[in-house]
Image (cartoon, rainbow, N blue to C red; front, side, top):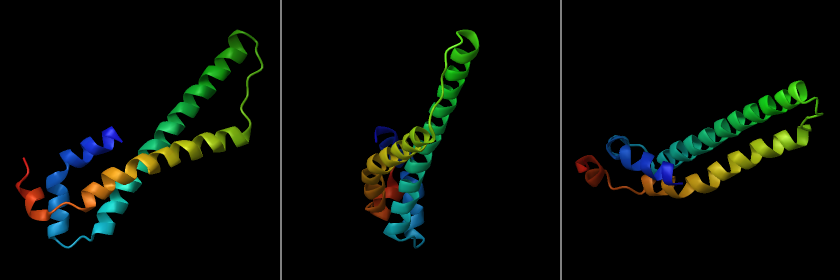
Length: 107
């Protein structure tokens, strides 16, 4: 959530410009919520890749049986996306409620 709050703060002028040009609050809300979910899902994919790499190394180097069932992979990606959604809603809501005049003045 903190990263998304910083993102909203850094992009205040962009948000103000979009609102001043006619973007509706829901468009701003969808944009930042989707960004949070995509970033979290990509983080989940990166974590899965590192996990598979570690499992492969354990299998090759130590001859340990290591594998992940499909349900665990789907659950991991679902939970990372869900956490992105949960922690991305408040920053997206704040971005969508900005006053365009104040946002354009922000530096």
